[in-house]
Image (cartoon, rainbow, N blue to C red; front, top):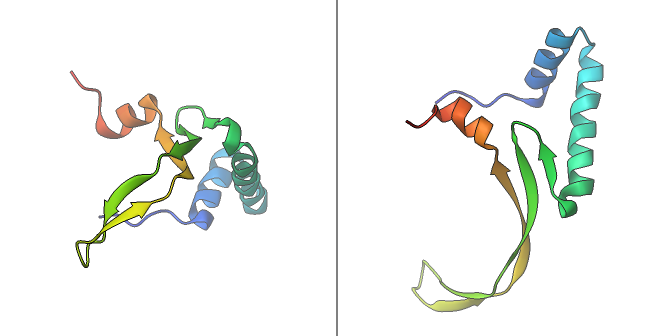
Length: 96
């Protein structure tokens, strides 16, 4: 399996493609992340890639894998990333 790109490698690619300095590309990446964190409550979408959504999970019964004992899992809010159809098609190929 190929190694994941680091923040530095992504910044280098952005800088090269857009004739920017690497420092500017890093600032753009950091600003995008900051913007996503601030707006995740209202759903943050990156067109063509996906969106961050806030989901409320209900309380449920689970099982401790070590002991097999049933446990009560509390309701909680979680952040999910939903991949855009365009990204799925580009990565996996279009279904016939």
